[in-house]
Length: 574
Image (cartoon, rainbow, N blue to C red):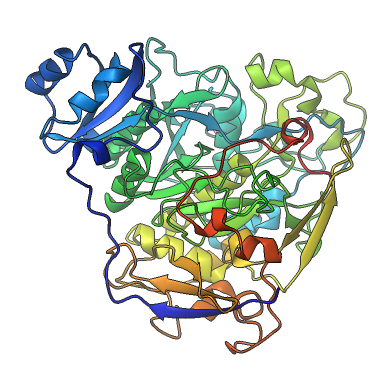
């Protein structure tokens, strides 16, 4: 099926107003049956205190944690008492404390002299350092993840730590080190110095995007890479409070969970939006469910929360195929695709290298001990025989690895111009992203033999491929919002983008030549020959556009694709 894109400027706001009836206060996936205690987040229309906690206690509930950011609290309470609690006039929302996971998959592929990832050079971080002296110096990046260890590549030139603040939000676990191995890897992509691979004896420096940033280590993922909404919300609240103390300009969230309801009602989505509106650029991994065809969508509609929030920068993963050139790069087959479920926002916003990415190894962490084949042999990036040397770098794949590429880029932009807003950062990154021609990519999983086909449409690659030098050169300014537009089929085989759909007022896309949609998303991807009547743009497969799952008000069943385990085991081949 051939589809063409048109756009309209929505004249009315679709901002959601929470319903007042008790039944509508309960999240759609909340199980209110049975007398067993469950953990829920309760949001109030006032800041909760002793009086509110006492009323929950009268229903058999127990306070577990206060969440001041969203005027809420976490309680353990019998499930069958939630309907009665919803009768409380001060209660706005009751939702499950959903499980959240890190979005990096492992790639247990032995190297045997295979090429390097070239991720940081592919997107131009070397040019940023050499030509523009952009290193992220003075900018704080909050890494909300599994913790960060003070590894050599994460230190400054004098051997001092760049972790300027550390706190654990995991109940009962106050350690801030990285027991899982994911957070340190993410931090290395954002700001690793490459100290352990720099010098005449090395053929490749394993470096991050912004090697002089400061890290704010907010630990939320446990030793198995798991967390929940309330823990992440608490960490986001702390980042906002610490913003001015540590010049926090960026939050990186390489984690997520399935979408369960509209973003406007989702408490995790509300939290990231508050951080954005507080002046912090929020970068979120898109998810690793692009291979999921369990609902017949070919992976469309699989963006995870909170990447489904229209304000934040949602990042998909590219496969560099082990070369420095962009010309052979392609989307990772597992990278989640839009539009977002229920709200139908056009996501991801852009893509960055995320497949088989080298970064710091955290010895003894869960990932390190479970997947020793992911340890990058020194001989891969050094001259001579180094087989006896201990590996200091580790290889991971996933949109978890793509998001920190963009977080690092945002830190570079803020170093050069600390006055730009999160919306300007997002808009400049999207406008300057390298545009894709109309392309179809095919990969075959080497373990299962299954074949996956992806196309360079707006719901797969967004506005294009991260280009750091072009983003740094951009001087475009805006006074309006850069929220992601909504998309919908119009009944005649076309897709319509709508703006001003979430009550954000004036929206930058489509308002001028500078920010016109054909400039941001590219003439060949979105518009074909820039004419709405062009027939050269093919948008995915016909099953996607007729799918009531993607465009309806229902949720995906959240079932994994048959070979999901091999995604975790192997990533995409080079």
